[in-house]
Length: 190
Image (tube, rainbow, N blue to C red; front, side, top):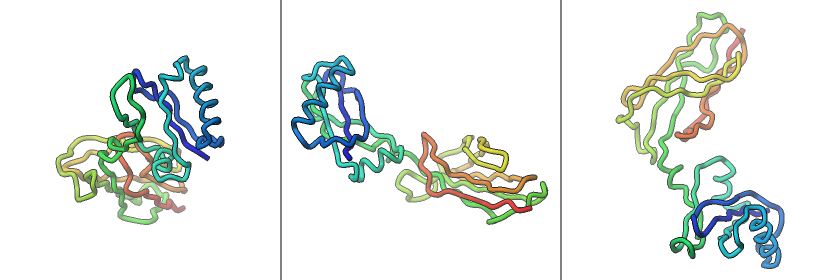
């Protein structure tokens, strides 16, 4: 399996990217593939820059995990070529770290689960004390998926939850603007 990215040399914009099972290291296969890309996207073959990696490459793993990425170009438009991919946007995102005061709570609408979130700096060197404000965090409860508003002060926030149904509470699913340091799952017992 291979992963590829094709870009328009004139606009230096992504045309298409995907994993594919054809052997992109074979020059005749690559030529036929470029012809198909040209036809499918209405871009002259000469205006397409093509880049590929083995599907086992760590960068491809990051792409498949949903990390934000962008093409890097050697040279300027309209003659530049794709030289790689960059994860600078993803790597600049801050981290959310989840914890709870209990590993299990009772579904009696009285037992309180306190969920705490710490916002870490992009390099995880500590708490981002510069952040204060609201974040709507995706959570899952026995009633289904929803968002819970957490109010942060100096990079930290806590929120109390009560439950009337058994099941699980979880937090830490992927968010567009933040990376997750961990996931949190708490059992809700009858």
